[in-house]
Length: 285
Image (cartoon, rainbow, N blue to C red; front, side, top):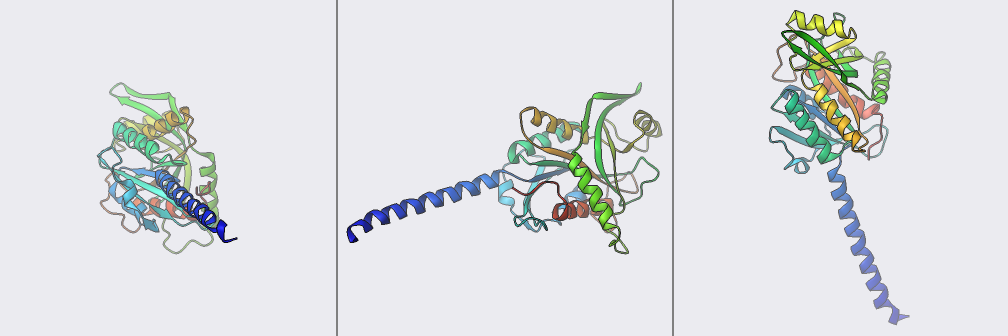
């Protein structure tokens, strides 16, 4: 029997090497992917989102363009699955349609996420909205606004993830009985997001034109349509990726510098974290 031991030992040694190589390759593969990438153009929202991470791994985010985007990679523990969600937060110092498309394209190419979310804050266009309410998109539609008026680009309208809408509604309904005296977010509303070259909500003519074109519009911004268009292009290349937009309603048109208690930034950050932990519509990879 002893004469077979060297061969057995060599086989065991080979199997050990193969298992180590497989583990290393799996680790590298996992590092290349994310379950969720959230892109924002507001530092307060980026900070509120990062506060929801249970751990960070910024080494994986190094070297990912464009230069105007700062990436933070980490994990959020799931209350339903044994493994956590791998989440990447992208904060773009540049804003507008071009910057949004570049950030979204980079996120899709680098991490190939199952969901790409655009998060932000904005004043509500609907009088029934209150500060700290959270908006989850059903539709993102693009417009162009010039001195001649508003043009609704019907060919650039994008439906958001139905599963995400359902998950958000479930979270909202089940959270009401247990809502604390000062909730981290208010009501959860679903509706349309208007996105165009100008989004100055102090311009009453613009707001009237937006609501006249689509009365179900709740928020207007400049970036959401570009992010949605990037997702549509990725799907054309056979990438399976969901898309949604989360907004926290803020009181004024002016951005806040930090995710203060009671702010729209705090609301959208806390809502995103809770949704990941309890109701996210896909299992971690």
